[in-house]
Length: 258
Ligand code: PAF
Image (tube, rainbow, N blue to C red; front, side, top):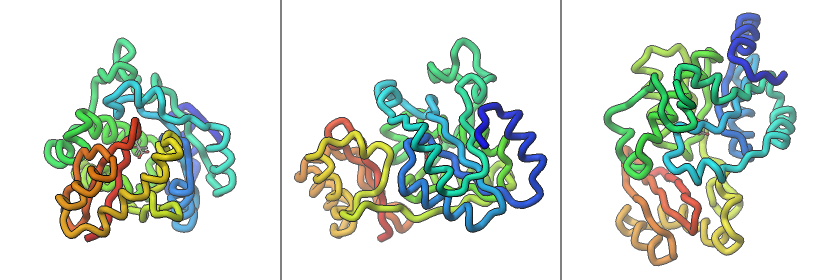
């Protein structure tokens, strides 16, 4: 079943007796999302997928405009993975509390704001990004009310922040981390990879190698710079090496255990 209105999702939810697993996405689904759906399928009676390109988490309007949108193939993937309900909310419905086109302009009345981790790493380069992420995830969780919600480890800072938010607000949901799915050359799967040129795509696999094969974060940053990446950051944090770096117009993020 597909639905766009929050009221339809809430009605459906009230009728479910068993557990609900939830996979929130911005669409342009790939094998990484399929893996989240498979985990959700295995561990719950029902699976809900949301597809919403959330405008408030894009600090760059060009990035929002260019974000891939592939609804038809997303719906086929959802069918293939046995999703019970696909929610495709509209901006106006999700940000109904905003006035004057709020979500589209980044002005929205109620927001979830974390004061520490969200200003580091990706947050230092994408001001407001995690306010947009946490706010939309809070809204989605409030409507779907899942027992479990699934997030990829590729967006490691996002995963930590969502976990912390769930704990801080006593949300009755278990946030489940799912390991990063990689292409055969090691590149982490991402909806943005389709925007890489053929040449950049070949280079992109070096990101994870530099993270794994360097002795320090600083060494990895230098090696990436030498290989033609524009590095935003490489830093070690709580047993992980986190990085964001650009190839042409595409910003890649990745992380590995250290
Ligand atoms: O990881 C994503 O795709 C997005 O940040 C999320 C969690 C769906 C919120 O828009």
